Length: 368
Image (cartoon, rainbow, N blue to C red):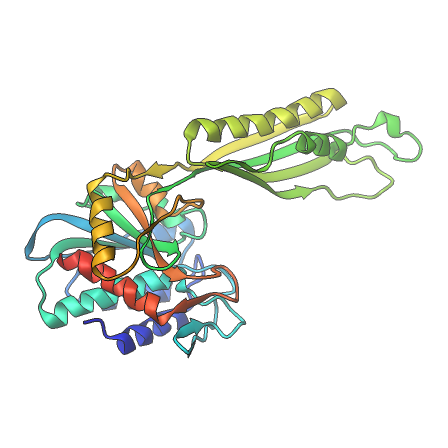
């Protein structure tokens, strides 16, 4: 029942709408129009004013005729850069950007899949369950839109977040929490040629601390990475300041906190040993979530994937999504793959089949 030609046309139209983070206004306007025309009660919030975006989060409710609690379908409308002037190319069943921009399959594949499924429900007059749609802004900026969304307005207690890599049939029932580290090591300046012994090198202290850290893959649940190590100055001056920005992720809260404490401890010891001082901020940006394999939502998703002929592949998550924020509000989320590949790069692609299967899966969940 999915109209492949219409689906691809709609996806490409969405992809062409510029909607880099903080500039989602045009995409919001288009989606509000489309969802209202498809019979949804649509509201937007004031998240744009709070985050500096031109757009707002969208909440839509559709009244069905089948019994049961409403399921939430979630995706995000913003993209990473370079996302302006996207010109999708469809060739041999694959959609790409042409190589100068991202494609925006992350996450307009989710948007297009939901809209196509709802279009089929409407045009065929299919019985369906009540459902809710949440489309956020600022997901690519630390889940900013979801953090400003009022989940108390939502009726459903279970959600599928259509924002995962992997072919349709990929189910991600968990994901790590994240802590961001911002550390500033302060030493003491001195002339590097005349009196270096009077100085305390912030670079040396910071480097010694980093060298003592366990980094990258810590275990099957925990990773960490330093993204910034910066100190600038003349070679004839002992550097007085060095800055480090890092992240820690883990699906286990105790391990998350322990790794952050370990990294801060390494820096503190190095500073103490060399006479430098440390200013270290640890900020939890989102928490982990997990949906047990025997949860009714997991059983429902496996059955729906099998019913449309998509092999089920359960994958432990390694990144954050709006699902992490939903979990804080008592909602049980699961992330689903839509087939997007090489996201956040100019090589991003998605197959027409995965777009079709995304829409088919959503349709099955809406009507089964």
